[in-house]
Image (cartoon, rainbow, N blue to C red; front, side):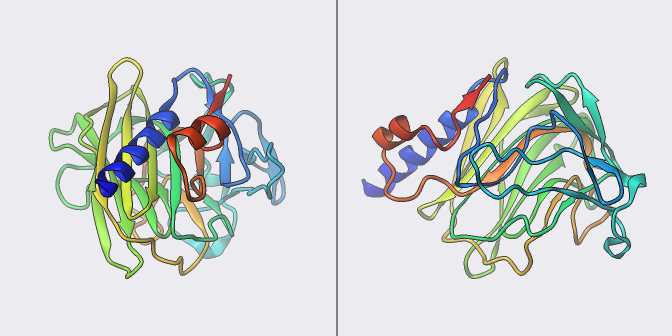
Length: 269
């Protein structure tokens, strides 16, 4: 009964996270990184990126734009995603052409729990055969991929989560992803459970939940957006926006606490 209650609270927490497609995330002190993609900022000799929103007063994380194939050469403006106007969440979004990467250094400090939110639109899938993963978000211990559903037309969101013992768990969403359509992904790992909700307002949301005990302490603290650090061919082709990651509301959390604080994922227009 206790385990069921925890699962129900976890799902309720994620339902709050989904919100509606017309609003953006509200920052809070538990957020580690938050990219609204609304404005640009010069970093490292004038290279353009989208700054982290630190409206809560926490320490901002400024992404460093880097190459997807050679991490030693520093900032590389040949692999920048295009900051494109017309986001459904207001402002701009990041357009990845299948060869672009954002790298945020010192961006994930680890913890036994984690939340991840992002909005995505796929306009190209990896091959259905072979290494058919395209990385939207990559760090230790949580990675979010786009997977070819097998017909070269539709996709599936796939989470790869490493537990406290370092064991990998492939944890997939069963929501079918159509190309050229915006979707939202909300992931949370807490209380030994991991859950992911994928969907949009028009098609509805699908929840998938599994048991994963703890999270692996990160070996390094980089966050990679648009590619896989260890698999440079796993490049995302599509659009990303409203990227947020950090820690969930501390224990103990209840439905009342969620409603009272509204810190986890209440959004603002």
